[in-house]
Amino acid sequence: MKISAIKPFAVKGGFRYWVFVKVETDTGLIGWGDASDWDAPFSITEAVRYLEPFLIGKDPFDVEKIWWNNTQIFKRMWGGIAWKAMSGIDTALWDIKGKALGVPVWQLLGGKIRDRLRLYWTHCGSAQFAHHQYLNSPRLRSIEDLKKFCERVAQSGLTALKTNIMAMNGTPLYGVPREEIFTGKISNEEVETACMEIEVFRKELGNKFGIALDTAFDYRLDGALKLARALEPYDMMWLETETFDVNAQERLTHLTTTPIVHGESLYDLHGYLPYLQRHAQKTIMVDLAWNGLTMGKKIADLALTFDTAVSPHNCHSPLTTFVAAQFCASVKNFDILEIDYDDVPWLDELITEKIQIENGYLLVPERPGLGTDLIEEKLLEYAVER
Image (tube, rainbow, N blue to C red; front, side):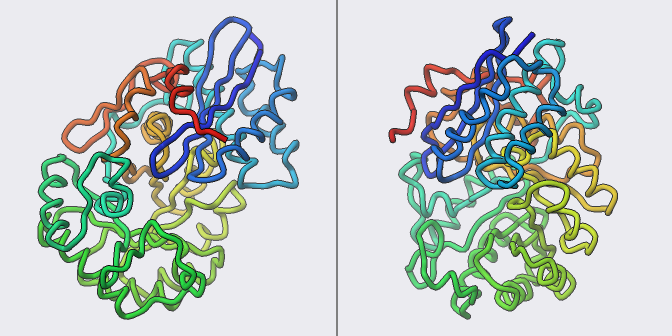
């Protein structure tokens, strides 16, 4: 069996873009991968097309070899767009291998440790605040709206959530560009707003419910520490805050009792190693659409060496959830899996098999490969226009 074609697809995902990769073989067997970034979809599709001629005629079973060959092709473009293109191809190759052998990908990764995966609802409340028009969901405009929304969260059966700081005095903080964010400062009003929102979730959902807050790269060390300490009374599942300064990340982790999580924007073993060596976080987040299954598994094993849990970054497409399920089923130090529980109405139209959730847990797929296929006609129907 040889690779005969590689085709990328840029698809509308509502408040973000999805990029999918289809790898075809001369036997007719195909594999699907996800290379999604919320932005710049055509940069990724062009990077995929650039790699195609290097891979035509190659054996799709040579997943490891192809990964390292691609790193050589992109040796001066480590991470970013290049690695997202590589990762989409990588995942599609794992899909082909699983289908050809008649086994789920988790079997190829060493076998299944668990049958179900605890989930948390990501962008919970903040998506309904900033992106409601894509979700067929009423917009959250007030604390009273948030309290009412908590009824829906409780009814979902999920046991944890992650949200964002939504607004301050009626001014949106999430989902809109802000020049002042580049300063890395955090105002007293922002801290008060964050605590007010978290307090609503805690009061309405109870003390056993996991609650996390994601601020990404918004704040420098002093701002992140100020927020982390303010959140200490709420028994947070974690505060997610990022910096490429490992010293700052380590200092933040050791100066607050609020658990700190990061890592979704890192690539490769070398990117994660210094943070793991310094125990600069409670849990690392690995994005499998940006590191692939090949590198993602290596990163998880490296984290295990440093007694650190792994929680995949998974706020892209429905296919990414299937990819993450294969990964999480086979990783010893898995913690909890992210999912956009409230997503665009056309999400399920794109896949042949649906994600199975039961009592707040994702049931690990048993079908060969990733456990689902994408429907190419639907990808074209929802294609992003240049």
